[in-house]
Length: 197
Image 1: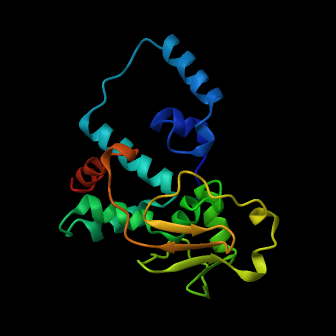
Image 2 (image 1 turned 180 degrees about the vertical axis):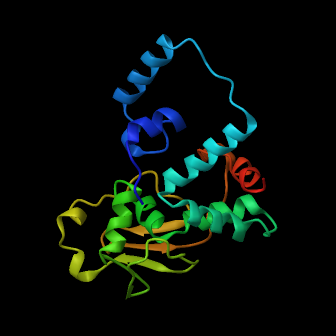
């Protein structure tokens, strides 16, 4: 998926969308611009929904068609917000990223697409593959010596729904991720409202 200029997108959607924008330098430039720009346009409900939808798209690096499909599959669930959150978080590229095996989701996507990741001992090249509870995601044996995996360390931000073994370079998915409103960057309700128009 072609994204475009990341800083420009971050200025529009917020610094949390890309890791590249979560720096002191970016925040400083943003505070200078907001101080100089005294005119703030009022955003309509449609505009807010569109921004939330774009945040989800760019954060997970998915296309419009993919997001529309995730929304369609989740809307009929008992808890649609929980369902879409779990679907996005359980993507194979996101699991690799959350475990700390890649610095960004784009990097994780590339690692999967280039065949460096196994799921339950089987090589997979589909970043959007839906990982299930009990699955073991691991770095392929032949890829363990690659420089990209040389200095793997278990980070402090590993979610509680997965167990990471840095020595074996493996991830065990213990359960489905739970949606916690305070820890999520975007408003899924606004995304559903956007697609219900």
